[in-house]
Image 1: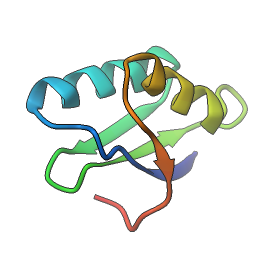
Image 2: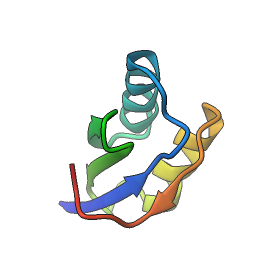
Image 3: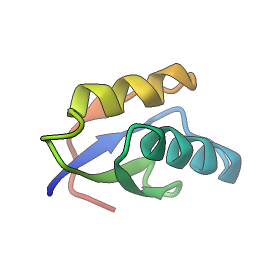
Image 4: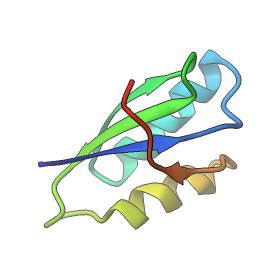
Length: 72
């Protein structure tokens, strides 16, 4: 499994956290989303899903996504 930290600066409420988790899970990854830090730590199998696919799934829900950060 591979881990990546994604910054999601326009996340603003618990509803956002639920939507971002749903987006991450929709492509077969797992995520730990922190509203306070506006970040998500995603864990995924690169043989099944790419980081780009995870990012695009989150963007489809209307969120900005940047790679990087120090974790939740």
